[in-house]
Length: 357
Image 1 (cartoon, rainbow, N blue to C red):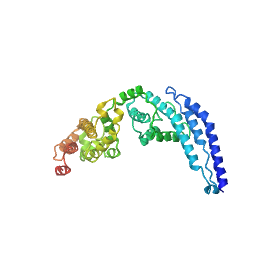
Image 2 (cartoon, rainbow, N blue to C red):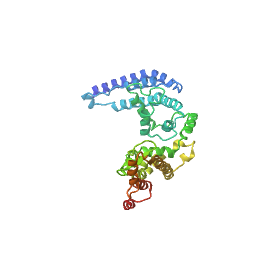
Image 3 (cartoon, helix red, strand yellow):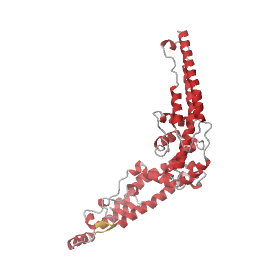
Image 4 (cartoon, rainbow, N blue to C red):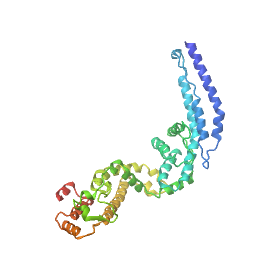
């Protein structure tokens, strides 16, 4: 049994060595091909990775191999080392070239450029690698903008995600294009970090879920007769939920610090371009976000009030009914204005609101 196991493992090692030897020249040729930013393509590098992945001799697994000497660990280690070497020297240069080509293509797109520059900094050693972020961005954001398909083959995504994982333990990186970084920074800095964070705050599920303030719910039974809107909207269309008293106290204030803290992680992306963003703190960022929110809060309610007007008195009957309502102690106008005051007085307490009712 010992002898059979010995010969099985020796044969496996010999077979694996032959496969690796057959790969040497093709891999050398592919690695020598320049990763061109002008005409990026992943095809050759991915074909090489497929060849490396396929060149794996399975360790002997017969019953007698369990009792004798085994080279399983050595075989697996050699296969892993060869695959990692190919990732670093064959695939990664083409991935970086594709990213550079995409960034030049979208160089005036500030929304795209933040994630792209953040990824590029990590892939070129300018920032610490965040594997989850880069993998997610590479799969979900890059493809729609890339000048060449990043995943043209069945295993292309698997190879590239493996390359990104491997980058986290790199001790050397592909040198960044300094001109590209400088141009990308100019674009990224056209939208400030507080503005980006504010946009993220509004998109936060907890904030977005706040119900809209609907004027018809507060104007009373005669509201639809007494009021009209310059925009021709109905009273069922009101003010977005985030810009209500509930939205402010139950969602915005609860989420703003967490969103600011998450956005602050991107400060390094702005380094060298706009110091007011790269050097900000979480507390300062929270304050800046709230300033933007307050401005929009005022604008939302100002727009709503400017849109409201008294309905035209088309005949004597309508005039009589509407004037009767407007002169009553519980008129539609009083109901609506009271409700607006309740929503726009953000410093009031709920107890005070209950007393006013």
